[in-house]
Length: 502
Image (cartoon, rainbow, N blue to C red):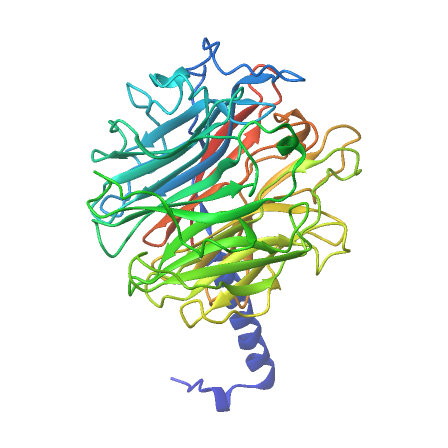
């Protein structure tokens, strides 16, 4: 038998071998690309609240409700059973804020098919609440604890009064049944407005659950004082409610910063590090005058004692240069969210994403990412993750890290716009298997959809799919829950689900 070691191969043979190796590596790279699951519809038709007549605002102008329109979904996967997925979303969006109620879906086959509780969680009167001030609900969120207990949260409100209330419910059977909502805070006072709440079950301790939101306050004003409507002396401090018994009961809500703090936060969200350290990620603005201030940062507050105490001042990640989101021709706005945080469950590395114009043309946004490898004390300079070209807007990013340390970022953009009418929109998924150094892209929408048929919420703020979209993981598989338009005026949007496996 003739030896064919590398040294004895003829030059031509060696070149052929090198070519074969290159081809093999190329095909291996293709094989290593993410595997997409089947796209399924999580929301239901018709709306369970379609016949509800509650929640009409007096205006001016009076609100319009988009019955059968679902927006702003969030999702989580049961850590004890990867086939059990729970999604929440706004159901029947109003033009002037909130929805008939938030709806809930659960899956026991990994998101292939969806079921719904026989009795909706009574976040609003449309969903069965006996509190007549809770006419609408919004800002849905869900989080599984380490033993499989799910925790959901919502903001309930009165469109014709001053009520904003944060409510929480729990499920111990995978989303089939839910407890009567606990009231974490209920303000019926024009000086206060609770907003943008989220809930996080501590993955290191089944007894601990954290709810956080911003409580907007206009200091020095009296309830009902006419000039308050035009007052710009806003403050927006982060508020926390904590449960130490797995969501059965809750401690009184309290601010986590000094009472004299002169700043405005929004979009507060708690991430839990493997050692139990809490990170409250938010948009942080300083200065007086009309909010948001030009002194706008992405920032975190830290707690090393499970939320009992917090750092007096935030750690700033980077200044925020987000600009207004618009459809491609600039003729109409898009209401879009801008930030999210995730933690590597093994290393404790933190990843924060938001929309920012610094790497675009100053008039459009990209999705950027910053990383912390020292428990949130310092952060890397932001880098662009989204693949939208300059002059094209990207919006509403989410970030998640799976059990292998792979990082995923999802978002919408308008890069495929070619039609003479409408605005072609797609939902994208970026995957990094090396801690954010490089990224591989997948498109999660099977075809472009037209965002101009989405609900408007309100007209001054634009087409609305949600201030956030859901992204979770179990093992190595990522789960995405996001809103798309349908092309129908009687059913403007659906919430759809798709898995991605590296």
